[in-house]
Structure formats: C-alpha cells, structure tokens
Image (cartoon, rainbow, N blue to C red; front, side, top):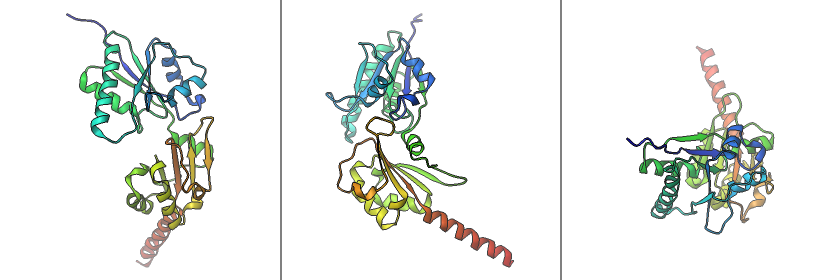
Length: 259
C-alpha cells in the first residue's frame, strides 16, 4: 500500500499591491517550506505578485518557480499553458511538498489561480487545494478613495469591461455602483458612455491600487486616448438610478394612500 504523502496546492492571496494588506495566514505560508510559485505574463516580464512579496521584505528561495500565464484570449494556447503550469506543480506535489501559488488581489476573484486549480484537479482529483482569501483591488480602491462601494440596500455590479458597452449601458439602469475591471481595451468607449449618461463626475479611475505606482484619476475624461495599465479599474456611481428608485417608491406610497 502506497502511503506517500501528496502535497497540497495553496492559493496565497497578497492583496492588490500594498504589502501591509497581506494576511497573517498568507505571511505564514510565505515563510513555510512550501515550494513558491508565481505568475508571469511573458517569459521575460516581471511578476507583479512577486513584486508585492519583495516590497514586504521577503526573499523567496532560489528554487521558486515562475508559471507562465500569457495575455491571450486564444483558448487553445491558454489551455496548453495552463496544462504546462499544472504539470509543473503536480511534479512538486508528488514529492510530498506543498506548493504555494502567490497571486495579487484575491485568488478566487478573476485570478489565474482558478485556471491552475481546475487544470490540476483534472490531472489528479485527489489533490487538496487551499485558498487563502485576500483584499480585492476594488475594496482597496474604495478605501483609498474614502468612499463606500455600497450603502444600505445599494446594488453593486463587478464586471470585466470586456463584456462590452451595450452590456454596461444596461447595467447602469439596474445598479447603484459599477466596478469595471480590465478597462484598458475599451477605455475610450467607456468614457463616451459615461459622458453620454452624465456620469463622468461620479466616476473614478484607479491604477495599481496600493503599489508605489498607484494612480488615482478623478477627471476620467482626461484619460481619453491614453494608454493605461492592465491592473486598473473604474468605480462608477449612478445617482440617477437612486433618484429613480426613490421616485418609484413615492409613487407606490401615493397609490397605497389613495386606497
């Protein structure tokens, strides 16, 4: 009977950029004997997650491994790279050593960790997986702005901007706050939409929240035709919807009183 221990995969959320937001559990794993891995976007690029760790004053062991997750929407290419990363992790787990995957933000929210965990599970469904939660970029951004994302019974939508302008327009009719992630490819179109809906004054752009390169832009229209970083988002407040809800509520009260 083979009783050899199989290691565990641990998704270590680091928060969006400020090393002060690393949780105690993540810190504990970073100082354990787990094999450390982290995502890179190209073979020659730096890792944003690794940068957070380094700003925290942590030096990873020399045998730490970068895992390649390219910026492409080609499902065939993505599948091949996910499989390569999962096989790299599996080879370490089979030695009995845990593997920690260091990832910016929260590992369960639009994260490369989800692809890695699913692909690894397809290779071996018995592998144990732990996810350490972290501070998502939009929570950190709201804190930096000093504004709540939601209040009382507000409705909030968190969506990648890539869903398209038509979808975003419909969401503005139904939600009090929109958090638009990955705005880089559609930024000009989003600015046009916000201008048409008179929401530019109620919007704010945040890039690399909590990192030394953090940028906050309240004059969103000034970003037109500007190249922004992939790690950026827009928070859009929609006071028109709130006023509409109040008006509809008042009409309901009037009808009740008339009865």
